[in-house]
Image 1 (cartoon, rainbow, N blue to C red):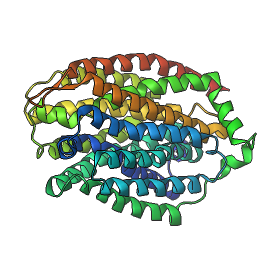
Image 2 (cartoon, helix red, strand yellow):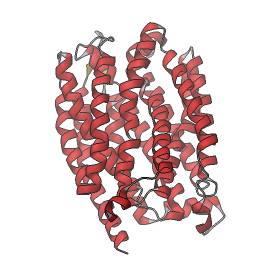
Image 3 (spheres, rainbow, N blue to C red):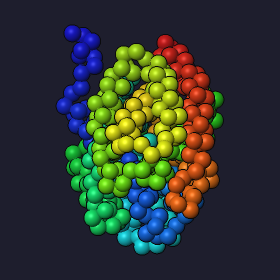
Length: 409
Protein backbone atom coordinates (compact mmCIF):
# COMPACT_ATOMS: atom_id res chain seq x y z
CA UNK A 1 0.00 0.00 0.00
CA UNK A 2 2.82 2.38 0.91
CA UNK A 3 4.60 1.57 -2.37
CA UNK A 4 1.41 2.26 -4.34
CA UNK A 5 1.06 5.68 -2.70
CA UNK A 6 4.69 6.37 -3.48
CA UNK A 7 4.22 5.72 -7.20
CA UNK A 8 0.69 7.13 -7.62
CA UNK A 9 0.14 10.43 -9.44
CA UNK A 10 -2.16 13.18 -8.15
CA UNK A 11 -4.58 14.98 -10.48
CA UNK A 12 -2.24 17.90 -11.24
CA UNK A 13 0.65 15.54 -12.03
CA UNK A 14 -1.61 13.67 -14.45
CA UNK A 15 -2.56 17.01 -16.02
CA UNK A 16 1.12 17.95 -16.37
CA UNK A 17 1.98 14.61 -17.98
CA UNK A 18 -0.79 15.25 -20.53
CA UNK A 19 0.34 18.85 -21.18
CA UNK A 20 4.00 17.90 -21.58
CA UNK A 21 2.99 15.03 -23.87
CA UNK A 22 0.97 17.41 -26.09
CA UNK A 23 3.85 19.88 -26.16
CA UNK A 24 6.23 17.16 -27.26
CA UNK A 25 3.68 15.92 -29.80
CA UNK A 26 3.63 19.26 -31.61
CA UNK A 27 7.41 19.78 -31.48
CA UNK A 28 8.22 16.20 -32.51
CA UNK A 29 5.62 16.24 -35.30
CA UNK A 30 7.03 19.52 -36.63
CA UNK A 31 10.44 17.86 -36.91
CA UNK A 32 9.34 14.39 -37.98
CA UNK A 33 6.88 15.49 -40.66
CA UNK A 34 9.73 16.63 -42.89
CA UNK A 35 11.01 13.07 -43.33
CA UNK A 36 7.86 11.56 -44.92
CA UNK A 37 7.31 14.81 -46.83
CA UNK A 38 10.71 14.36 -48.46
CA UNK A 39 9.32 12.31 -51.33
CA UNK A 40 6.88 15.17 -52.11
CA UNK A 41 8.98 18.17 -51.12
CA UNK A 42 12.19 17.34 -53.05
CA UNK A 43 10.55 17.31 -56.50
CA UNK A 44 8.20 20.19 -55.57
CA UNK A 45 11.11 22.51 -54.76
CA UNK A 46 13.51 20.80 -57.20
CA UNK A 47 16.13 20.17 -54.51
CA UNK A 48 18.75 17.42 -54.13
CA UNK A 49 19.19 14.94 -51.27
CA UNK A 50 22.04 17.10 -49.96
CA UNK A 51 19.80 20.20 -49.91
CA UNK A 52 17.01 18.27 -48.23
CA UNK A 53 19.49 16.99 -45.66
CA UNK A 54 20.47 20.63 -45.04
CA UNK A 55 16.81 21.60 -44.49
CA UNK A 56 16.55 18.88 -41.83
CA UNK A 57 19.92 19.82 -40.35
CA UNK A 58 19.10 23.55 -40.26
CA UNK A 59 16.50 22.96 -37.56
CA UNK A 60 18.91 20.86 -35.53
CA UNK A 61 21.86 23.25 -35.79
CA UNK A 62 19.80 26.33 -34.85
CA UNK A 63 18.13 24.41 -32.02
CA UNK A 64 21.52 23.36 -30.70
CA UNK A 65 22.92 26.89 -30.80
CA UNK A 66 19.87 28.45 -29.12
CA UNK A 67 19.94 25.77 -26.42
CA UNK A 68 23.52 26.65 -25.54
CA UNK A 69 22.72 30.37 -25.45
CA UNK A 70 19.64 29.75 -23.28
CA UNK A 71 21.34 27.27 -20.91
CA UNK A 72 22.76 29.86 -18.53
CA UNK A 73 19.31 31.45 -18.12
CA UNK A 74 17.32 28.19 -17.84
CA UNK A 75 17.52 28.06 -14.02
CA UNK A 76 17.00 31.82 -13.52
CA UNK A 77 13.31 32.08 -14.37
CA UNK A 78 9.99 30.43 -13.70
CA UNK A 79 10.03 27.37 -15.95
CA UNK A 80 6.43 28.02 -17.05
CA UNK A 81 7.29 31.51 -18.36
CA UNK A 82 10.47 30.15 -19.97
CA UNK A 83 8.51 27.38 -21.68
CA UNK A 84 5.74 29.69 -22.91
CA UNK A 85 8.20 32.19 -24.43
CA UNK A 86 9.92 29.56 -26.54
CA UNK A 87 6.66 27.82 -27.45
CA UNK A 88 5.22 31.05 -28.90
CA UNK A 89 8.40 31.46 -30.99
CA UNK A 90 8.10 27.86 -32.16
CA UNK A 91 4.53 28.48 -33.40
CA UNK A 92 5.71 31.59 -35.27
CA UNK A 93 8.47 29.58 -37.00
CA UNK A 94 5.97 26.89 -38.01
CA UNK A 95 3.70 29.57 -39.52
CA UNK A 96 6.65 30.61 -41.70
CA UNK A 97 7.13 26.98 -42.79
CA UNK A 98 3.47 26.90 -43.86
CA UNK A 99 4.13 30.01 -45.98
CA UNK A 100 7.43 28.90 -47.60
CA UNK A 101 7.51 28.72 -51.40
CA UNK A 102 11.25 28.39 -52.08
CA UNK A 103 14.16 26.36 -50.76
CA UNK A 104 15.76 29.48 -49.25
CA UNK A 105 12.52 30.57 -47.52
CA UNK A 106 12.00 27.09 -46.09
CA UNK A 107 15.61 26.95 -44.87
CA UNK A 108 15.20 30.26 -43.00
CA UNK A 109 11.84 29.14 -41.59
CA UNK A 110 13.38 25.92 -40.27
CA UNK A 111 16.20 27.88 -38.63
CA UNK A 112 13.71 30.13 -36.82
CA UNK A 113 11.59 27.16 -35.76
CA UNK A 114 14.69 25.41 -34.46
CA UNK A 115 15.86 28.44 -32.46
CA UNK A 116 12.69 28.27 -30.37
CA UNK A 117 11.68 24.61 -30.67
CA UNK A 118 15.08 23.29 -29.64
CA UNK A 119 14.77 24.64 -26.10
CA UNK A 120 11.27 23.29 -25.41
CA UNK A 121 12.30 19.67 -24.82
CA UNK A 122 14.98 20.59 -22.27
CA UNK A 123 12.57 22.80 -20.31
CA UNK A 124 10.00 19.99 -20.32
CA UNK A 125 12.54 17.48 -18.98
CA UNK A 126 13.61 19.95 -16.28
CA UNK A 127 9.96 20.32 -15.25
CA UNK A 128 9.62 16.53 -15.09
CA UNK A 129 12.68 16.36 -12.82
CA UNK A 130 11.22 19.09 -10.59
CA UNK A 131 7.78 17.51 -10.26
CA UNK A 132 8.42 13.74 -10.32
CA UNK A 133 10.70 11.53 -8.25
CA UNK A 134 13.30 9.26 -9.87
CA UNK A 135 11.31 6.12 -8.97
CA UNK A 136 8.50 7.06 -11.36
CA UNK A 137 10.35 9.01 -14.06
CA UNK A 138 10.52 5.99 -16.35
CA UNK A 139 6.71 5.83 -16.34
CA UNK A 140 6.46 9.59 -16.87
CA UNK A 141 8.92 9.47 -19.76
CA UNK A 142 7.01 6.52 -21.21
CA UNK A 143 3.80 8.57 -21.32
CA UNK A 144 5.45 11.82 -22.46
CA UNK A 145 7.42 10.01 -25.16
CA UNK A 146 4.11 8.65 -26.43
CA UNK A 147 4.17 11.93 -28.34
CA UNK A 148 6.39 10.13 -30.87
CA UNK A 149 3.73 7.45 -31.25
CA UNK A 150 0.94 10.04 -31.40
CA UNK A 151 2.80 11.90 -34.13
CA UNK A 152 2.87 8.67 -36.12
CA UNK A 153 -0.67 7.46 -35.37
CA UNK A 154 -2.39 10.84 -35.71
CA UNK A 155 0.05 13.44 -36.98
CA UNK A 156 1.98 11.79 -39.79
CA UNK A 157 -0.95 9.98 -41.47
CA UNK A 158 -3.15 13.11 -41.27
CA UNK A 159 -0.22 15.28 -42.36
CA UNK A 160 0.55 13.04 -45.31
CA UNK A 161 -3.13 12.86 -46.24
CA UNK A 162 -3.34 16.66 -46.20
CA UNK A 163 -0.11 16.90 -48.21
CA UNK A 164 -1.43 14.45 -50.81
CA UNK A 165 -4.82 16.20 -50.98
CA UNK A 166 -3.49 19.77 -50.99
CA UNK A 167 0.29 20.34 -50.88
CA UNK A 168 3.23 19.94 -48.51
CA UNK A 169 2.37 23.19 -46.65
CA UNK A 170 -0.84 21.72 -45.20
CA UNK A 171 0.78 19.64 -42.39
CA UNK A 172 2.50 22.75 -41.01
CA UNK A 173 -0.82 24.62 -40.98
CA UNK A 174 -2.30 21.72 -38.98
CA UNK A 175 0.58 21.89 -36.46
CA UNK A 176 0.02 25.64 -36.00
CA UNK A 177 -3.64 25.01 -35.14
CA UNK A 178 -2.90 22.31 -32.56
CA UNK A 179 0.02 24.26 -31.05
CA UNK A 180 -2.11 27.38 -30.56
CA UNK A 181 -4.59 25.43 -28.43
CA UNK A 182 -1.76 23.89 -26.38
CA UNK A 183 -0.22 27.33 -25.87
CA UNK A 184 -3.44 28.69 -24.34
CA UNK A 185 -3.62 25.68 -21.98
CA UNK A 186 -0.05 26.35 -20.79
CA UNK A 187 -0.77 30.04 -20.26
CA UNK A 188 -4.00 29.64 -18.28
CA UNK A 189 -3.87 26.22 -16.59
CA UNK A 190 -0.24 25.42 -15.79
CA UNK A 191 1.13 26.49 -12.39
CA UNK A 192 4.46 28.35 -12.07
CA UNK A 193 7.51 26.12 -11.48
CA UNK A 194 9.88 28.07 -9.24
CA UNK A 195 11.29 25.69 -6.60
CA UNK A 196 14.72 25.76 -8.29
CA UNK A 197 15.04 29.53 -7.84
CA UNK A 198 15.60 29.28 -4.08
CA UNK A 199 18.71 27.07 -4.37
CA UNK A 200 20.72 28.95 -7.00
CA UNK A 201 24.36 29.54 -6.07
CA UNK A 202 25.14 32.24 -8.66
CA UNK A 203 23.16 35.02 -10.31
CA UNK A 204 25.52 35.22 -13.32
CA UNK A 205 24.02 33.12 -16.17
CA UNK A 206 27.33 32.83 -18.02
CA UNK A 207 29.14 31.61 -14.91
CA UNK A 208 26.30 29.15 -14.35
CA UNK A 209 26.71 27.85 -17.91
CA UNK A 210 30.50 27.54 -17.51
CA UNK A 211 30.12 25.68 -14.23
CA UNK A 212 27.66 23.26 -15.82
CA UNK A 213 29.74 22.42 -18.90
CA UNK A 214 32.98 22.08 -16.92
CA UNK A 215 31.88 19.32 -14.54
CA UNK A 216 33.57 16.04 -15.63
CA UNK A 217 30.59 13.79 -14.85
CA UNK A 218 28.31 16.06 -16.87
CA UNK A 219 30.74 15.99 -19.80
CA UNK A 220 30.66 12.20 -19.92
CA UNK A 221 26.87 12.25 -19.98
CA UNK A 222 26.98 14.79 -22.83
CA UNK A 223 29.29 12.47 -24.79
CA UNK A 224 26.72 9.71 -24.40
CA UNK A 225 24.08 12.06 -25.82
CA UNK A 226 26.20 12.61 -28.95
CA UNK A 227 26.01 8.93 -29.80
CA UNK A 228 22.36 8.61 -28.79
CA UNK A 229 21.44 11.33 -31.28
CA UNK A 230 23.49 9.81 -34.10
CA UNK A 231 21.42 6.64 -34.30
CA UNK A 232 18.03 8.33 -34.57
CA UNK A 233 18.83 11.29 -36.80
CA UNK A 234 20.76 9.36 -39.46
CA UNK A 235 17.84 7.15 -40.48
CA UNK A 236 15.03 9.71 -40.26
CA UNK A 237 15.65 12.14 -43.17
CA UNK A 238 15.43 9.61 -45.99
CA UNK A 239 12.96 7.13 -44.50
CA UNK A 240 10.10 7.97 -46.85
CA UNK A 241 12.32 8.13 -49.94
CA UNK A 242 13.84 4.72 -49.07
CA UNK A 243 10.38 3.26 -48.46
CA UNK A 244 8.98 4.46 -51.79
CA UNK A 245 11.98 4.06 -54.12
CA UNK A 246 13.78 1.03 -52.65
CA UNK A 247 11.15 -0.95 -50.75
CA UNK A 248 8.46 -0.22 -53.34
CA UNK A 249 5.72 1.34 -51.21
CA UNK A 250 3.42 3.99 -52.65
CA UNK A 251 2.87 7.44 -51.14
CA UNK A 252 -0.65 6.31 -50.23
CA UNK A 253 0.76 3.37 -48.25
CA UNK A 254 3.10 5.51 -46.13
CA UNK A 255 0.33 6.78 -43.80
CA UNK A 256 -0.71 3.15 -43.23
CA UNK A 257 2.87 2.17 -42.37
CA UNK A 258 3.36 5.08 -39.97
CA UNK A 259 -0.06 4.49 -38.45
CA UNK A 260 0.62 0.81 -37.69
CA UNK A 261 4.01 1.65 -36.20
CA UNK A 262 2.50 4.44 -34.10
CA UNK A 263 -0.38 2.36 -32.71
CA UNK A 264 2.10 -0.27 -31.52
CA UNK A 265 4.22 2.47 -29.94
CA UNK A 266 1.19 3.66 -27.96
CA UNK A 267 1.20 0.28 -26.24
CA UNK A 268 4.93 -0.41 -26.10
CA UNK A 269 6.03 3.11 -25.02
CA UNK A 270 4.34 3.17 -21.58
CA UNK A 271 5.26 -0.51 -21.13
CA UNK A 272 8.93 0.33 -21.75
CA UNK A 273 8.72 3.15 -19.20
CA UNK A 274 7.17 0.91 -16.57
CA UNK A 275 9.70 -1.85 -17.22
CA UNK A 276 12.61 0.60 -17.01
CA UNK A 277 11.46 1.57 -13.49
CA UNK A 278 11.12 -2.10 -12.58
CA UNK A 279 14.21 -3.78 -14.09
CA UNK A 280 16.50 -0.76 -14.24
CA UNK A 281 16.83 1.98 -16.82
CA UNK A 282 20.23 0.84 -18.09
CA UNK A 283 19.05 -2.77 -18.48
CA UNK A 284 16.11 -1.52 -20.53
CA UNK A 285 18.46 0.60 -22.63
CA UNK A 286 20.66 -2.43 -23.40
CA UNK A 287 17.66 -4.55 -24.38
CA UNK A 288 16.38 -1.77 -26.66
CA UNK A 289 19.83 -1.34 -28.23
CA UNK A 290 20.13 -5.04 -29.07
CA UNK A 291 16.66 -5.15 -30.62
CA UNK A 292 17.23 -1.91 -32.56
CA UNK A 293 20.58 -3.04 -33.95
CA UNK A 294 19.17 -6.30 -35.30
CA UNK A 295 16.17 -4.62 -36.95
CA UNK A 296 18.20 -1.72 -38.39
CA UNK A 297 20.50 -4.25 -40.07
CA UNK A 298 17.49 -5.99 -41.62
CA UNK A 299 15.63 -2.82 -42.60
CA UNK A 300 18.54 -1.05 -44.29
CA UNK A 301 19.16 -4.06 -46.55
CA UNK A 302 15.57 -4.48 -47.76
CA UNK A 303 14.66 -4.57 -51.42
CA UNK A 304 11.11 -4.53 -52.78
CA UNK A 305 9.03 -5.81 -49.85
CA UNK A 306 5.28 -6.17 -49.11
CA UNK A 307 3.90 -3.47 -46.83
CA UNK A 308 2.87 -5.90 -44.08
CA UNK A 309 6.40 -7.31 -43.83
CA UNK A 310 7.80 -3.78 -43.66
CA UNK A 311 5.20 -2.91 -41.00
CA UNK A 312 6.27 -5.82 -38.76
CA UNK A 313 9.94 -4.85 -39.11
CA UNK A 314 9.10 -1.20 -38.34
CA UNK A 315 7.07 -2.12 -35.25
CA UNK A 316 9.94 -4.04 -33.67
CA UNK A 317 12.58 -1.55 -34.79
CA UNK A 318 10.73 1.37 -33.23
CA UNK A 319 9.99 -0.69 -30.13
CA UNK A 320 13.75 -0.96 -29.60
CA UNK A 321 14.36 2.70 -30.44
CA UNK A 322 11.55 3.77 -28.08
CA UNK A 323 12.96 1.63 -25.25
CA UNK A 324 16.39 3.24 -25.72
CA UNK A 325 14.95 6.74 -25.81
CA UNK A 326 12.70 6.38 -22.76
CA UNK A 327 15.31 4.64 -20.60
CA UNK A 328 18.13 7.03 -21.52
CA UNK A 329 15.93 10.13 -21.03
CA UNK A 330 14.88 9.00 -17.56
CA UNK A 331 18.50 8.21 -16.71
CA UNK A 332 19.78 11.58 -17.93
CA UNK A 333 17.31 13.51 -15.75
CA UNK A 334 19.03 11.97 -12.71
CA UNK A 335 22.54 13.20 -13.56
CA UNK A 336 22.38 16.92 -12.61
CA UNK A 337 21.88 18.32 -9.11
CA UNK A 338 18.61 20.31 -8.72
CA UNK A 339 20.20 23.76 -9.15
CA UNK A 340 21.76 22.70 -12.48
CA UNK A 341 18.77 20.91 -14.00
CA UNK A 342 17.67 23.60 -16.42
CA UNK A 343 21.20 24.37 -17.64
CA UNK A 344 22.16 20.68 -17.89
CA UNK A 345 19.01 19.77 -19.80
CA UNK A 346 19.44 22.74 -22.11
CA UNK A 347 23.07 21.93 -22.90
CA UNK A 348 22.19 18.25 -23.26
CA UNK A 349 19.37 19.11 -25.67
CA UNK A 350 21.70 21.39 -27.63
CA UNK A 351 24.30 18.67 -27.97
CA UNK A 352 21.55 16.27 -29.06
CA UNK A 353 20.30 18.70 -31.69
CA UNK A 354 23.75 19.61 -33.01
CA UNK A 355 24.80 15.96 -33.10
CA UNK A 356 21.55 15.14 -34.86
CA UNK A 357 22.19 17.90 -37.37
CA UNK A 358 25.67 16.57 -38.08
CA UNK A 359 24.22 13.05 -38.37
CA UNK A 360 21.53 14.20 -40.83
CA UNK A 361 24.11 16.05 -42.91
CA UNK A 362 26.48 13.05 -42.91
CA UNK A 363 23.57 10.79 -43.87
CA UNK A 364 23.01 13.04 -46.88
CA UNK A 365 26.65 12.51 -47.85
CA UNK A 366 26.56 8.73 -47.36
CA UNK A 367 23.28 8.13 -49.21
CA UNK A 368 23.32 8.74 -52.95
CA UNK A 369 20.24 9.10 -55.14
CA UNK A 370 20.50 7.09 -58.37
CA UNK A 371 19.03 8.38 -61.67
CA UNK A 372 16.00 6.09 -61.24
CA UNK A 373 15.30 7.56 -57.79
CA UNK A 374 16.60 4.63 -55.72
CA UNK A 375 18.83 5.38 -52.73
CA UNK A 376 22.24 3.71 -52.78
CA UNK A 377 24.56 2.92 -49.81
CA UNK A 378 21.65 2.80 -47.36
CA UNK A 379 23.14 -0.39 -45.93
CA UNK A 380 26.34 1.51 -45.06
CA UNK A 381 24.19 4.08 -43.28
CA UNK A 382 22.59 1.28 -41.25
CA UNK A 383 25.93 -0.18 -40.18
CA UNK A 384 27.08 3.30 -39.10
CA UNK A 385 23.97 3.63 -36.94
CA UNK A 386 24.55 0.21 -35.36
CA UNK A 387 28.14 1.15 -34.52
CA UNK A 388 26.98 4.27 -32.69
CA UNK A 389 24.43 2.21 -30.74
CA UNK A 390 27.09 -0.22 -29.52
CA UNK A 391 29.42 2.53 -28.28
CA UNK A 392 26.48 4.34 -26.64
CA UNK A 393 25.83 1.29 -24.44
CA UNK A 394 29.27 1.60 -22.84
CA UNK A 395 28.85 5.33 -22.21
CA UNK A 396 25.37 4.90 -20.72
CA UNK A 397 26.79 2.23 -18.41
CA UNK A 398 29.01 4.89 -16.87
CA UNK A 399 26.02 7.25 -16.51
CA UNK A 400 24.06 4.49 -14.78
CA UNK A 401 26.89 3.77 -12.35
CA UNK A 402 27.26 7.48 -11.56
CA UNK A 403 23.53 7.89 -10.88
CA UNK A 404 23.47 4.84 -8.57
CA UNK A 405 26.49 6.16 -6.68
CA UNK A 406 24.88 9.60 -6.34
CA UNK A 407 21.57 8.16 -5.10
CA UNK A 408 23.42 6.18 -2.41
CA UNK A 409 24.94 9.47 -1.25
